[in-house]
Image (cartoon, rainbow, N blue to C red; front, side, top):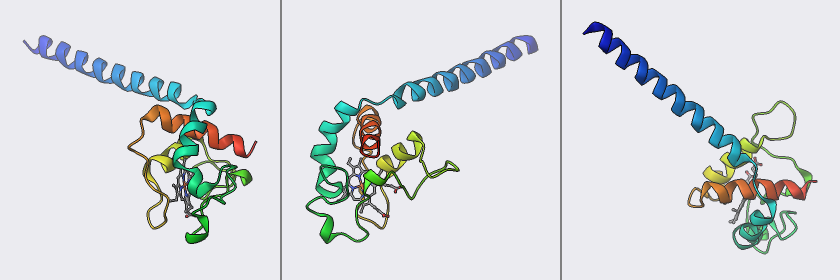
Length: 127
Ligand code: HEC
C-alpha cells in the first residue's frame, strides 16, 4: 500500500515537473515575435500615442502627461536587466500590464502572440 502511494506521489511530482518544463519552453518560443505582424497591431493600437515612427509623438501625445515613451532612444523605465536595455520579457510585461498612473493601457486583451509581435516591432525603432 505504502509503496503504491509513494509511486503515485512520484508520478505526480514528475507530472508537475513536466508541466513546468513545457510551460518554460513555450514561453521561450513565444519570445521570437514577428516584427511585421507587430507593425499592423502597432499602427492600429499604439501609434496614436507613441507615433507612427515610434518617436512618442502620436496625435494624442500633447494631451498626455507623462508623455508616451519615445522608442527610438531604446531607453525604458522598467527593466530587470543590469544594463539599460530591457529584456523582451520586461517589454512583454509592460505591454501586458500597462503603467498604472499613466495613460499607458494594459493590453492583456490581446493574444500573447500579438504582444510578442509588438515587442519585436517596437525594438526595431531603436535599431
Ligand atoms: C493612450 C496612450 C497610449 C497608448 C494607446 C499606448 N501607450 Fe504605451 N505608453 C504611454 C505612456 C504615456 C507611456 C509612458 C509612461 C511613463 O513614462 O511612465 C507609455 C510607455 C510605454 C512603454 C515603455 C515602458 C517603459 O518601461 O519605459 C512601452 C513598451 C509601451 N508604452 C508600449 C506600448 C504598446 C506596444 C502599445 C500598443 C499596444 C502602447 N504602448 C499603447 C501611452 C500609451
